[in-house]
Image (cartoon, rainbow, N blue to C red; front, side):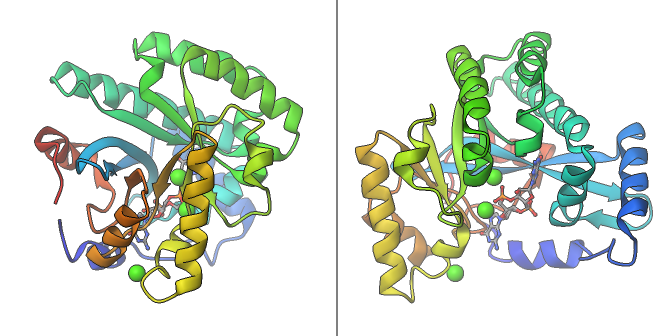
Length: 279
Ligand code: C2E
Ligand code: CA
Ligand code: CA
Ligand code: CA
């Protein structure tokens, strides 16, 4: 794995590129970005901690502004959500991800799964299920290879709407993961009333693992309870071997983080997918 992944990323990405613009201007730029197809997907491997093979990749959106550099999703996703533009951007993301997954399949990479982030506003729009079904058909992708990541709050807000949409997509074979688990207030027991198949423990817990007995107890407890409820667990933000060893020791199923690989453009992640084993 690349030890300097994190530094590369920071040098490459001028943070807060949009800080001098107001929301209206960002919105205007986002609309143009949709028209001009300025969004790109990067992919970060998710590793099966039992055999250290890549199980899936998570699609992470990047926005390249001509001559200016890359804008972080942390900056523009909130504006996109507020303005409703996330619905269109989200569609673009799903379409690009399915297309790339199909490309990989055609090059003999058959056993890789794809995780796609959804914002609450996006998956609760009318006809979201239809959009997904149409795109799966267009690229003839097996729904069993797809998982959608949604946040705790997004999942439990308008619970009945969530239940209906998740239920429909689940029947098709798509899986749902609860993202940033531990940062919200909802309980696993409540979440379990939705058809979810796993949780992603937020990286804020993982970074404290090596220093704090309490964090370790919390993560261990989350994993135990998740497993009892039949859920798989992914740890986000694994940055060093020590964190990895602790997580393996307490039975975490999957891991993701700079220790394995930072998010990479399609062509670069492809060579990792071909080699399959990581570290
Ligand atoms: P997230 O879904 O929690 O994604 C994980 C974030 O952690 C990513 O940031 C990833 O690059 C970063 N990361 C991965 N490994 C490490 C590590 O070892 N250490 C540290 N410090 N960070 C790590 P990124 O790509 O900047 O995305 C930020 C957030 O933007 C995502 O958080 C997600 O909430 C949102 N986002 C990204 N792409 C999409 C998208 O296509 N749609 C939607 N709705 N949201 C997206
Ligand atoms: Ca995610
Ligand atoms: Ca997170
Ligand atoms: Ca750390």
